[in-house]
Amino acid sequence: MKNYFNLIVIFLAMLISFAFYYGVMGNPGNFNDPQTKHEPKPGNVLGTVYTGGPLVAVLLALIIIAVTVIFERSFSIGKAKGKGAPATFISNVIKLLHTGKLDEALDVCDKQRGSVANVLRAAIQRFKEIENDNEFPSEKKITEVQRAIDESVNLETPLLEKNLVILSTVASISTMVGLLGTTLGMIRAFQALALSGTVSATQLSLGISEALYNTAGGLAGAIISIVAFNFFTTKVDNFVYMIDEAILQITQIFTIRIKS
Image 1 (cartoon, one colour):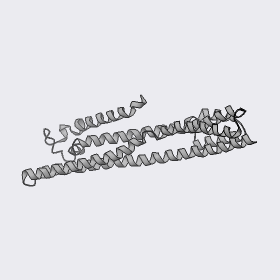
Image 2: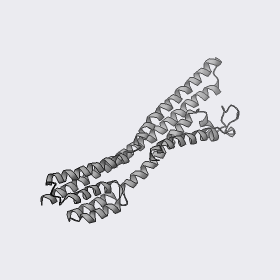
Image 3: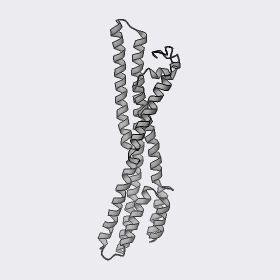
Image 4: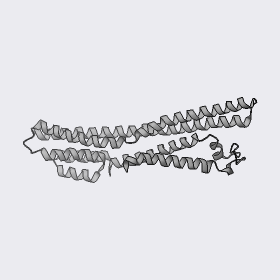
């Protein structure tokens, strides 16, 4: 089901946006000319935005996708932190390891859960298994613990970075779709001018409004996605740095314990 999450989100976003565009924005009651829907009623925002053309629905879908990913990433990263503050959890584990209480440290990891706890638990559990194993020399024990850490990190890091590429993609696509809508709107405006031979205020305003609303929609989608992408990338980087710092401290404790 997880593999189809993104496809489901994209499909529902497109469905909702086009339904909203044609059903709500394109409601005949929003226009002075219900048949052609070229003249929105004064002050009617929905009808006015509708004149931006079908690409408005595409831009709306992209914004919905971006907002959905933002909520999904907020929930996932929050879950990855575990039940308590990661910094406090790491400090508690380090204190227990300094006193040689491996089992208590494992219990704290089990209660905390989350990505940090999973990585630390993997390291502690592997060290506990091989600490008194004479088949492993001292250097090999640390190497074996590091291998367990690397495996756990390789499993946890992709979960933290998942779907961030969608935000960067939406940012790029929104800009391009907005630019396409702007270009089509200007083409429509000048084509109407060329066909009539005179300046038609109605046709000219339709083309310009199509251009401007698509520009606004594209910029809105891009801004939301870029800000969210940078925000979550920074959070993930800080999270990974915190994990690396905790791993370094644990490795030092285990090295000292083996040599003593």
